[in-house]
Length: 366
Ligand SMILES: NC(=O)c1ccc[n+]([C@@H]2O[C@H](COP(=O)([O-])OP(=O)(O)OC[C@H]3O[C@@H](n4cnc5c(N)ncnc54)[C@H](O)[C@@H]3O)[C@@H](O)[C@H]2O)c1
Image (cartoon, rainbow, N blue to C red):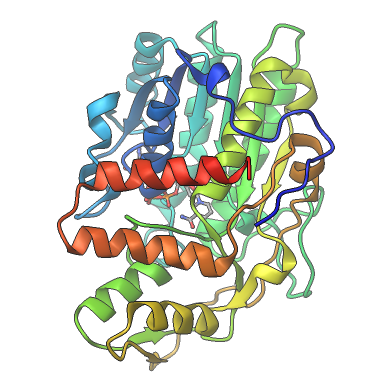
């Protein structure tokens, strides 16, 4: 694979920057937060986490022994007092807020919990930041689902209208508005922390066991030697490996820390248009890699609304952060299945995950 130099100075996550940095990650017990916390540990950062216990069993957090290299606090982002105390104790320079009710279908079942976690959780993170000097950069992770999806087959840009048909998507649009209002109201001074939001799409990677997500559903079904049932086989999504947006978050956090005023805005991270594939195509590739006659079938019944087309334009992150995807969807699937096979075979998953991080970082300099 070949990588072109971007229009800006720094293409890669910079270990010199992260060495010794005090970073608070909310949602560190989750799939993306676990990978990010492990990555930060390998970069030499001093990582503190704040989240509820892992949302699944098994979990990436437990499987890869993420707690070993960090301070892990169990707490609710809806609890402002506890969160403020955790921020005070960690005294972070950078906060990456990922804790969320992260799934569409459960948001239909419990919209109140979804809004309170995703909206008030974001308010509380910003409020705790406001009350603690020393924080230079806050990255709020939202979603590509925060845009108003009218069904038009085009990629969303950062200045497109926010919306959201279901409670999850709408809660992420609300989190965007909260971040913008806090930025304008409380963080616009010269010495203020930079507040940025990051909108990424569906990710795949080892260690996700969430319900109602494609890859974990496939691993569960194929492991039990039954076909995976697909609700919307022809829906397309901008698939990418979990390390891709995480690399973007780290690049953005560094820029935000260094020059807050120039980067305190919203950013898309997503694959190039040719990596947008239908659900059925992705699962066929996974099934082939897994082997043993793995296959899919249409799920019976009527399903809640989900956007049929979702694509985001990451041109701004490419041109201004020097970020670009390094793995195509076939590689992303390979790395994911490799991880789950290692899990199935009882391998040392901290080492397996660290090796994938090393391999990913190595790709930048080929
Ligand atoms: N995984 C994806 O494909 C994807 C795509 C776009 C955006 N995102 C966003 O990225 C972030 C991380 O996603 P993920 O896939 O790791 O989710 P996840 O469900 O695996 O993890 C969620 C994390 O949030 C924590 N959490 C949930 N409610 C909480 C509460 N009330 N207080 C404290 N902690 C709480 C959980 O304990 C866990 O650590 C989320 O904000 C999600 O919306 C994920």
